[in-house]
Image (cartoon, rainbow, N blue to C red; front, top):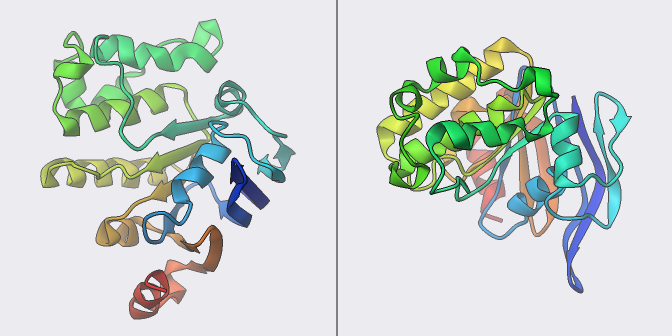
Length: 231
């Protein structure tokens, strides 16, 4: 279980996150929703150690991670798929996947066959450079690279952005498969409402750097959710 408690974050003198709390359970998808600019990406970056937060706590299975660097967060079991994918364009697909080894003990540094089963196109293109892949294929590569580290928490930032519909459907099926395995907590930041709503078990709505609604999806009326997001 991932817990974020009373987290605040600043860029310069501007406070972007104000006392954020979030809970994500293994075997569930927690969807963080809200309009652009409300702090969703900043929250994921803080959890992933990409940006230092000012106050608050991040706990994984009850253990306080302190203020982790990106490497320390990854070593703890947090994998981050950033908005924009950030694959290495001049490395091959296989080499991109192997960058996920960095936080693993040497004996565990391998790309599991299960990853290629989730993303068959990557098996076909493993010797092709990352920059030669389509946007949808690069997104699949970014998610697969995160899975190489065998995470306990998977953070996904806008995985459908700029992706063709058939790849969006495949990414949705992968998320459903990972949830069904029950081994990781999944935190999904997504502007595509129907995609996020369909996959979510728990929904957190952000506005102006704060969480203004936290609810299980089955207890949340869709119209109320849409109205809250538009505040």
